[in-house]
Length: 104
Image (cartoon, rainbow, N blue to C red):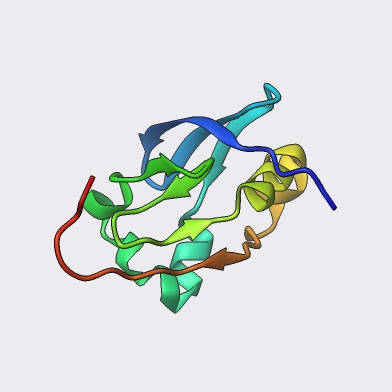
């Protein structure tokens, strides 16, 4: 079983970039723009005002419609930032869409 590194802080920077800090101290910027543009499941995130609404939930980055990205995937992209800067990001993710009122 591999250890999942939870994200402990996210900071929106600009465009489609978030600065992420993981519980082991690993940190860095991730640009989500390439993946958002090429993946229909991420279409709602193409609207900048929606993309900026990310929060932390369950140790990972999550948007109001329930879309999240596995923290380990983001962690590996930070660790391999030289490669990630040259190639489109590769994500595994789950989608959970909710209806009704937000109960936060």
